[in-house]
Picture 1 (cartoon, rainbow, N blue to C red):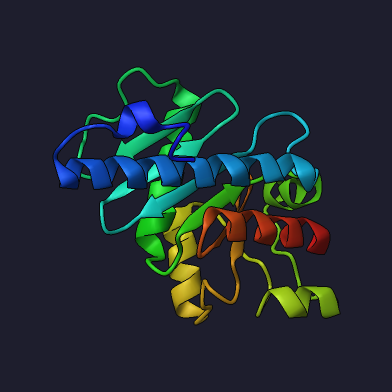
Picture 2 (cartoon, rainbow, N blue to C red):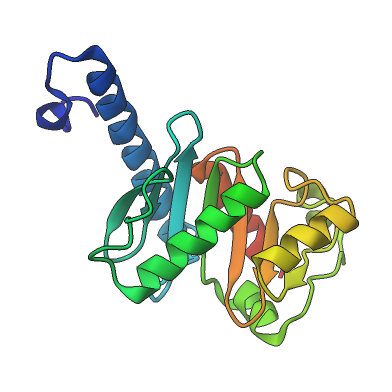
Length: 193
């Protein structure tokens, strides 16, 4: 990957060079994970979103069908020049990263079955071995991110063991240690639904 991004990585300042390399690697990882949505048949209409966070540098890379965006969590002006849908996706992903500091990647697959549960406002109950082997508990549906965080805390769900949730009238979300883990968990979520 370094050869692909070499013009962006140049420079003599070792800290800036290291940051540039980290940004390029984070972008590449998110792009590869985004491409996995299609492989798992989780994004038929190009509405999926994948992101990853570098908590040491307070930066998030988010990939939508239209664009890839690098957001500094230290900069309040990241919304300039972005469409409303991308801004909404970034806000949701940032809220999930803040709610669950254990996660490093998020996928919003817009897969058919899980999205139907989200649109109906229904939790996905534990109905079989596949669900139990991938998710510690039911997959909750919440009105918004704040309510989701409260549900996880009150019901003592560990976001690492129940790596997915539904947001009412929105979509399904899955997460993991990385963007690739998040996409894998999104595939397991869709299979469960």
